[in-house]
Amino acid sequence: MKKMIHALNANPLVSDYKINLSAKESYECFYVKGKLETVRRTDICDKVVTVYVDHDGFKGDSQFFVYPSTTEEELCDLIQKAVQKASLLNNRMYSLPENETGDYAVESNFSDYTLPQLAGQIADAVFAANTVENANLNSVEIFVNRRTDTVCNSRGIHKTQVRYDAMVEAIPTYNGETESVELYQQYNFSSFCSETVKQEIAEKLRDVTARATAVKPDFPLECKVILNKQELAMLFGSISHDLHFSTVYSHAGLFHKGDDIQLSPTGDKITITMAGALPGNIRSACFDGDGMALKTTRIVEDGKAIAYYGDNRFGQYLEEIPTGNLRCMQVETGSACPKCLTQAPYLEVLSMSGLQVDFYNDYIGGEIRLAYYCDGEKITPVTGISITGSLKQVLSSIRLSCNSAVFDGYCGPDKAILQDMKIF
Image 1 (tube, helix red, strand yellow):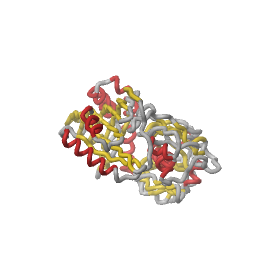
Image 2 (tube, rainbow, N blue to C red):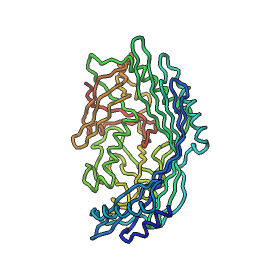
Image 3 (cartoon, rainbow, N blue to C red):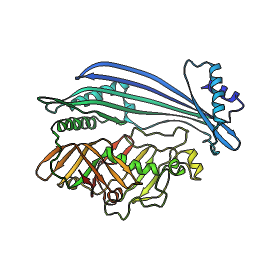
Image 4 (cartoon, rainbow, N blue to C red):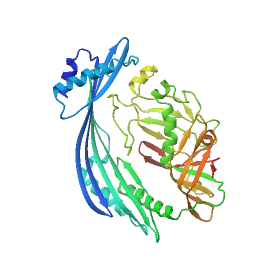
């Protein structure tokens, strides 16, 4: 760090600079058919330098990586090349964050364990779920990470934060009489609860069993559609993306402050808050890549866009107060109780090729790989169908569950009821 700062200060053409250090300690376990085959430990650190050059009323920037093998002579050469590139970029002027220092830690119970201890307990929870008949975990990979991020700039920013996350990759497999079926499961979390991990894996083992017997319906389906947390994260993420400073500035989104996200809502009204950190959320942080402290901001309230959010640069361009690059999304739960969700008929989506959300063309839909159809008498696993609908109508009548769940950067209703969807 000292050598990089000295070299940057020595170049008279460097107007400002930023140094990002991203260190990661990981403990990784690889299982095949329940047997631990490989254990690997890694300790890496990525070093990225951003050089800013003020010229002709503009502010250009350019980045480069620094490696352990980089010599002082090579570092000076990299800085000079970055200066030349930055001099060609005509970005509007803006100022960097200033004069904040400190050491921070994102709250997580991972800190109560060593990395090997935590990996072992996660493995115990994963394999405790392996109780479904004719189904097993063909392979399991467990990654436990301790990340240390440091940001230093020429304006007095020098911050460090520690945060944790874990990932379980599993291949649940169903072994039938004539063929086997496999699914891929990736589960990310930053707060450890053995029962929650067990439930997640058990759910995927049940899903792979259902996938083996799933059929394409030979009759039309006309019923409500139930989405789960993964698809809801994509739906609400599309709304939050439109209200990011950079999207608004580049005119790439549809919504602006004061716009109605929901037109004449008849279902639950949507409220979305962007935050720096949420319990169990793998995107939680104390500051962003610029070193800016993160300010929780409600962007949608009762179905209406009320604020923007985003990083330092584009906030200044829009003459808004920067909130920092908030990556955690909190969606308020709704009125749909478990009884409402199980009232037949319904189609509960378990896996899609990807939910497609298009506000410009008023479209929501996608291909369903696995779902449960309930006609009131029995529940049938189905596949080979698609759903489509008017996004405006869906958002107007959507009902959100009263129970919450966490999925990557999303925290909100674990399910939602969609009306007026066509199933074919």
